[in-house]
Length: 369
Ligand code: M6R
Image 1 (tube, rainbow, N blue to C red):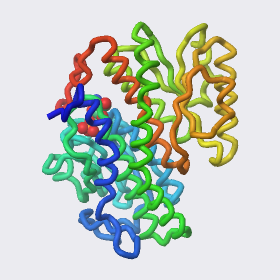
Image 2: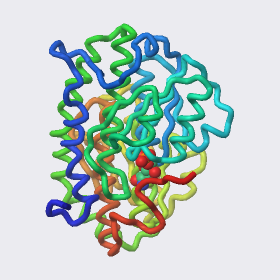
Image 3: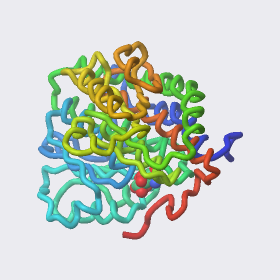
Image 4: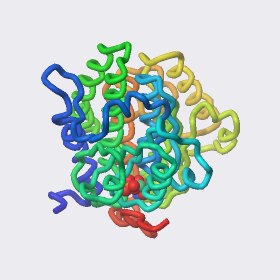
């Protein structure tokens, strides 16, 4: 069943290009307009939405966090992202104009299900982004957008994460289209960029050897930090989660801008730090700010493991290792930048002789609160 791969996780990392292709499949009409027929929710309801709250746990919540940047940009609707188990207990402000988006691979996560019920009781509409057909969360939602990642067996989520981001982006673009977004060309452009992602993800997978070698050399590491900014921030959090759950190594993800507000005190000689670098062609001066961060931590002894776009030479003087990803538009980079981090965690755990498919203390779907 593992199709010749050493583990389900390894297989599922390799399934990612197909998972994205399948999640995009059949969701545009002949004119290239998005058509989410399977949504089963009235367009007028979606047009009236004035706030979106994404609820999810773990990796699915990081996918929601990535989607927040994109949906706010395209739709100009405020998007909050909240861990499902926190949402329910804080008396959230929701009404019939709130769209709650529940993201779940299994569709059975009890924390997320309870939050879905709570949101509906409060009058919100719930749209779920789920991978498993026939599961409970979509049954209890007003609308559903399936990711088509195929069954995910390994406890650590990989292909579900990429397809959740893809599906949430489709939702964001669809809302923008419905609401007469002022940039129809941008929607078309993002859709065509999305269609190029499977090939680019494959390129990152094809470059896995370098990550593997570095991971194998780090089997004795006890702590790894991850930094990112903008959409790279949730990617950093996801990289840290993968390493915790698979390799049992203390790992923490930070927003790069937060460094000087505390975390930089953790940097000492030899501390490995992954840095997800924004595209040099991206907005504002984020790229140069993150390059300065790399410089600062390196000057304090950090071992810098940098994820940067092809051709980004500015990072070279400050990077101990560079993991290259193909050029893509800023909002789509998480689909590429997370892949070396998944491979790193998988390979490091394997080098430690651990079972990457069944990490200790964890279950694939958490059906208790
Ligand atoms: O099935 P779900 O997407 O609702 O699961 C949510 C989390 O439990 C899940 O993403 C978990 O964090 C994974 N083990 C992460 O790899």
